[in-house]
Every structure is written in C-alpha cells, then in structure tokens.
Length: 142
Length: 144
Image (tube, rainbow over all chains, first blue to last red):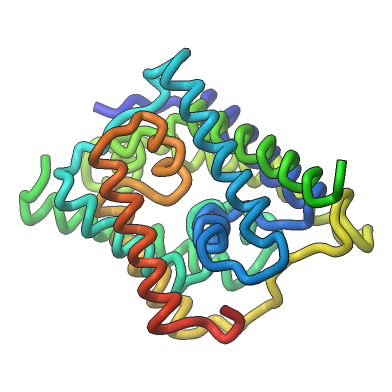
C-alpha cells in the first residue's frame, strides 16, 4: 500500500523547484537530470562537463546524507533487476530522443510554458500509466 | 573564485538541494511512483503534489530571467531554443514513459538512489547511460 503524503510531497517538490531556480538564476541552466547526465558524458562545450558532474555529485551527496541520516527516504524498486535493465535502456533512449524527463520537461518545461514540454509530459505520463496498466492486466506484477 | 569554480560550486549546491527535495518528496521510492502510475490500482496521487510544489517554486524564476540579460554567474542564459513538436520528441517521450512504468525510476531518483550502492539501481543507471550513448551515436539531434 502506498500512502498518500501530500505535505511532504509539496515540500519536497518545492525544494526541487527551488534547486532548479537556483541553477537557472545562477548559471542560466535547465535542471533536467537526463540532459545533465548525458551532457556530463558527451558535452563538447568548454566547461560543459564540469558543472554537470558537480550537479550530479550534489545529488549523490544528498543521497548519501539520506542513507546516513534518514534511510527511509530512499526505497528499492519492486521490479526485478532484469526489468530494471530494460527500463534503463528505454529511459536512456527515450530521454535523449525526447530531450528531457520529469525534471526537464515536467518541472522546467512546464514552468516556462513550453508547448513541447507540455506535450512530452502528457505523453510520458500517459505511456507510464498505460504501461503499468498493461503490466497489471497481464498479471506480470502485483 | 574563478567563474568556472563558482559555477561548479553553485551546481553542486543546486544538485544537493534537488536531491534533498527528491528524498523529502517520497519520489526516491519507485514503489510510490509506480503507485501514482497505477491508475487502476491503489492510486497514490502524491506525485501530482510534488509537481505542483516544484512548478510553484520554479515558474517565477523564468519571469525573473526574462527581465535580465544574463544569470548571476554566467554570461548568458542557456535555455534551449524552441524546436518543433516532432516524431523524435513524441517517440522519445513515449519510450521514456514506458521505461518509467517498467522500472519505476526516472533519472533523478535513480541518481540519488545510487548512494545506497544497490545493484538493481546500478543496473538501471548503467543501462540508462548505455541507452543515452546509443542515441548519441546512432541518432543524434541536430545540435548534438
């Protein structure tokens, strides 16, 4: 059973939004994690990889702090590891083709009223819901 | 501090705050995310509230940015130019959504969860980077 937690959801979301605002107003960059991860690997801009690696390191540091101080904040996926391998490929391919993910399109793109991001968000939300529905119907997962 | 150092320090801080937000929001629990996508099951709408909180705390930054010629620590804003809503975007969004529904992970929560050193999330992240590499090599965008 997944407990509906609107308050921590809102507060956590606000912190995410604040972080994105910090990156935008400070460096003029979009806080889209898929783009930042891809750019950390492939960027050919001068200093293109530096700030991205720093951002990812910050995220990892937060994760480490949770592991040490509040491990209940992070949980495993209920899916088998093989599924996660397939899921990872799809997410990697999809976020590059689609130029964004939940943070890039869903938070940043929608915040600046990008039609592209609105369409992309609707599509990935719909596809995600349909996928979970199909998995449920086929009985592949509880 | 040199400009590059300042940008990295800022990015580090922003990334840490972003990660804290993800943890606090509950989105670092793929089970909780899947419960949001599970519209026919025991639906957990928390993700909607996370999005609302995030957009609420971020949209005003673009209005602020629109009134300025440059951000605080860089010469210019790096906001991507408007590209058409095309097949590449649509296919990408759908594939990402399917992957999200299969695993319950999107990039942000996966990166934060790497700190647990769990094999499953490591497998996800490595596969994700592999998928990104494939697109980068085989079907790059015009500005890649």
